[in-house]
Length: 139
Image (cartoon, rainbow, N blue to C red; front, side, top):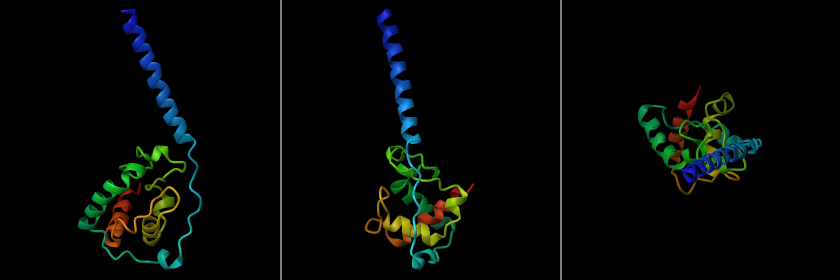
């Protein structure tokens, strides 16, 4: 009985320590630095309509390639994102939603730092669809 009680107490303390460590790791992430986008990309117009077919294609690709860092709802809370040095961003907020589709396309295609480049992994059409899907995260 005492052994079970000690084990349970130890398990609770260990679990609490892990939660604190996880929260502390997120608190230590730095905010992303300014990410300039060349004008030729910034001014690009998304060639895909934001219709259901495009959004569904974007959702499938986003869940496969992006959600592990950016989270299912684009809040920057994906399981891999918690381990990054830089916060992966909140796609629901005005700062993200205020950027052009071309800016999002560029950042996804070419990446930077901990954000991988997808130019050799995902076709442009699919990246545009991801942009359309990420627009659905708007608050």
